[in-house]
Length: 245
Image (cartoon, rainbow, N blue to C red):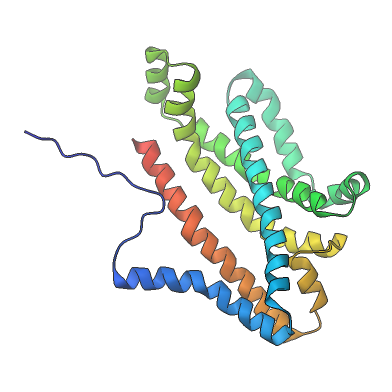
């Protein structure tokens, strides 16, 4: 008797129905519509608009990748044992420190450019990632830990079969939360330090034009919604599926 193979869930799988495909297509083109309207109202050339948008996207995703790597490494190293008892109160104190207070120091040493924006965004994103992973790792079922100890899995297998699956939901959840704060900080930081290219430059330039500002905000919200709906939420569902396996 043949046994049914378990259904594999792909993080970017979509239902092949007309309604779902239309919804996905509309969600993808929604930011483009608002960007075109913004370009028309503000009388800005599309190449210049997409260039500035590209700089901001590059900064936030560079910061996101660095925060994910550093946050994950710190979390799996400090989530339990004596190391965790000593380090977690210190990290909790650092999380409470106002990130904006570090901005003048960063500008002093790194200059007023894109590198400061990336550094500032890393500080915004890393703490939700770190504490989400620590929380998920500390809620690991006892029988899972016992299974790892009995099987004596170590090295790459321990990383692949245990650490990565149990930490993935916390990593992705923390990233979603961190990016929620980072989008707001991205525009504010680019305006404060007067970077040459970026979304902050546009919002600052057209702050006296209500129509252009409104369309710019709607375009940014549409971009954030599209990224969350098409990338992060499917990844979160996939991480839970992976953990249950």
